[in-house]
Length: 67
Image 1 (cartoon, rainbow, N blue to C red):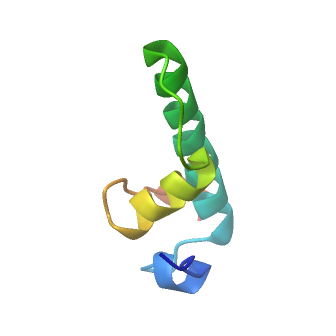
Image 2 (image 1 turned 60 degrees about the vertical axis):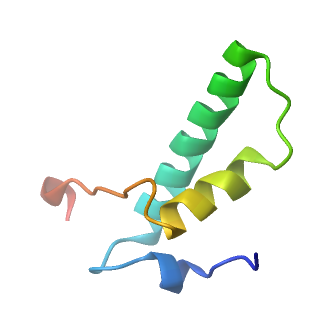
């Protein structure tokens, strides 16, 4: 799959900063889960996290107080 651009992922005026934080948090979760289960990852966790957010498997939720 080609890498989706940030504009394709972001909806409803979400910020780039929120996207970066969400991808980083999800990538860390993927890494931790793989370490606990002793699984060797075929793809990099960041790539998997971006694809999950793009495919709406993982949601980006912003705090409305920060806008």
